[in-house]
Length: 187
Image 1 (tube, rainbow, N blue to C red):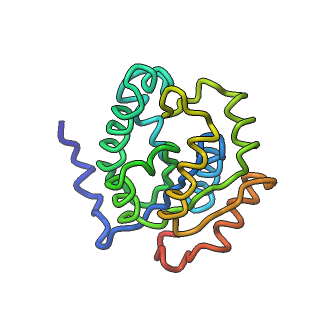
Image 2 (image 1 turned 60 degrees about the vertical axis):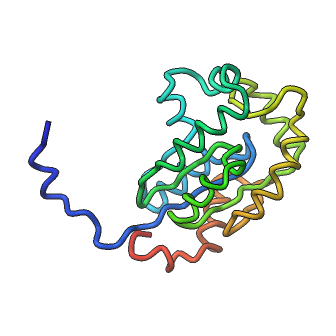
Image 3 (image 1 turned 180 degrees about the vertical axis):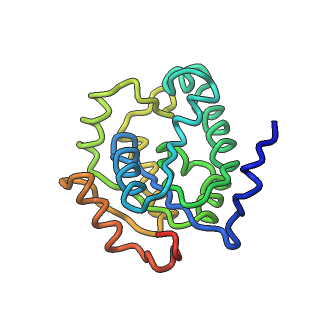
């Protein structure tokens, strides 16, 4: 059904950027992303939650049933189809495995790699084992941590160490080190 009030909302003349957060599960992408979005007065999207909404179940159930490679293809499809503006996007940790995904995120704006030591990641994942990890049978958390680290560094515009800092301290650091001017009038 067409709603007449939508006609009154003019799309922006110039696309406003997004900020994407990448990094391992448990690093704080969702928590920091929500705070960053609130600070910028932007929208917030968690791509893992979009996948859960698409399938109507928890991410771990989806990854278990689909397997790593099929899950990565699903994640690629969801993230590559995003058409957002003025949004902080918390991605799944495995998003870096698909070039098309990363190209799409780069087109939308800066990519920030949230980094934490392996021991911290392992501890946080152990506290929430149902968080949903794209991991092949026989792979350890350490295996995927080191496998992904080079990819995170390859695609990021900015790297933020999250440990031992609070999420609020990370947001302040990101805003201080990111070229907010380049984001235009939307920041």
